[in-house]
Amino acid sequence: MQPETLNFFEKVYQVAKKIPYGRVTSYGAIATYLGAARSARMVGYAMNGSHNKDVPAHRVVNKKGLLTGKHHFDGTNLMQQLLESEGVKVKDLQIQHLETVFWDPAKEL
Image (cartoon, rainbow, N blue to C red):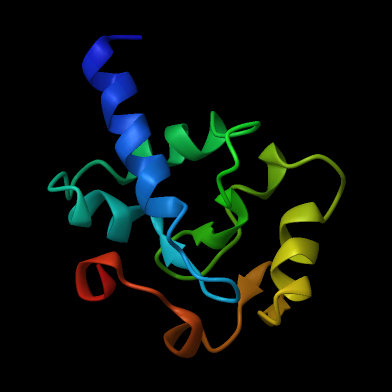
């Protein structure tokens, strides 16, 4: 990977580490906050590579609240289980009441 890609990933991790317990954000919200609004997919790649970096990747979902990154977690439903253990309601792989648990870094940081 190019150095600028790694720097972007580190910025993504810094933002993701600030997502409060029991809240979620989206790939696009992180990308927009970092000034790269069209880079939601790169945020997804960063989340995929975040294992062993103490990043709460389970708190990052797609813009509709779908657990699109769930296949990157060990076990069958680990992403959902982690979210539910924080009080986030999930049904059919989708965050319920997304508007009440959504954390927007552009507004919060």
